[in-house]
Amino acid sequence: MKAQKSLSERKLLGVAGLGWMFDALDVGILSFIIAALQIEWKLTPEEMSWIGSVNSIGMAVGALIFGLLADRIGRKPVFIITLLLFSIGSGLSALAPTLFVFLLLRFFIGMGLGGELPVASTLVSETVAPEKRGKTVVLLESFWAFGWLLAALISYFIIPKYGWQIALLVTALPAFYALYLRIGLPDSPRYLALEKKPSFSQNIAKVWSKEVRKQTIVLWVLWFTVVFSYYGMFLWLPSVMVLKGFSLIKSFEYVLIMTLAQLPGYFTAAWLIERAGRKFVLVTFLLGTAASALLFGTAETLPLLLASGMFLSFFNLGAWGALYAYTPEQYPTEVRGTGAGMAASFGRVGGILGPLAVGYLMSSGSSVATIFTVFCLSIIVGVVAVAFFGRETKQRELA
Image (tube, rainbow, N blue to C red; front, top):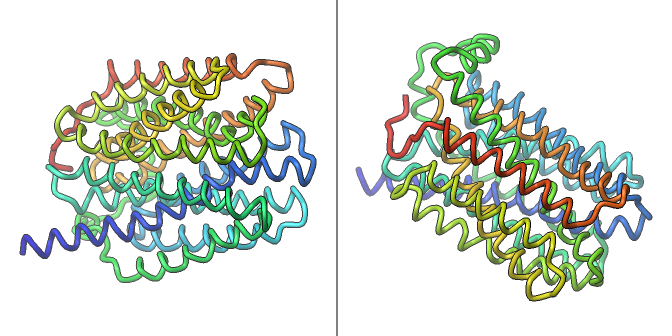
């Protein structure tokens, strides 16, 4: 029985992780496509920033809608719907003739992506044993690094030679395989055991009830600061490297090197999270992110740029893994999808503002150092919230 359970947990991690990887592939390749579109469509910094922000608007809407739906119709159906929405939208965006059409499709892709991530982490959290729950969710999040690595490789080898349209088609097609695998997955046993499914309004009210209000506020602040800084920094990485004087192909190459550091970041966070706790990992890795952002913003030489970029990847993505492990643990089963979805949705507002802030700060003549200092300060706010007001949930049984 134990071996059977272990097998199903591994299968769940693999299937959920595969979808997570294709999501990351799409977000990662967008950062490279923005740099390519700037040249092909002669985009202004403001237009470039809107590509990332529209994606985040879709993610905010998707996280809210699909988080609510996950508590009404189940984790598995939402898991399938979101990947389908993302896959079709991603394929169609390769055919976009204008920036407006591209932005419209990015909204729907964002909806699928924003809805899937909190629902996937909720499903895994509710299926895995308490002593392995945090580690497993961080390992799930580690598939994000493989997606980014694939994005960097596809961008480096395909975009300069075949164009961004072919790159998008290459990323969309394999996602249908993940969709096929997902159909055979069972739904969350905790969700299936619920006798009563509250209404949308009851769930939203419960997320803000006295029992969990403090956790909700901490999560909303944490999600906003992490997403604001992540999308502001990482969607602009290739473009920032171009601004620092490197060619488009060289910037892709250097971002690929930086991306490699995401994997040890995830694995270190996965090792620490059941030993030192969620709060320790979040605080430590976010402080590392803040310091790395300052270094990257002020770096002038290539070795310092690469080193600080690698540390930025290491610490930031390790913090993301801990965030996805920590979030579903703050709520009881009947509102877990709603609570995680609403926190992620509010965080995506930061994802809208982050890329926009970079575009407008650049247009006003602000230096890269100033921009990355803004992201550093944002992360410190998140550190304070979780360090002083967050609740530790290491190896606690879910309610």
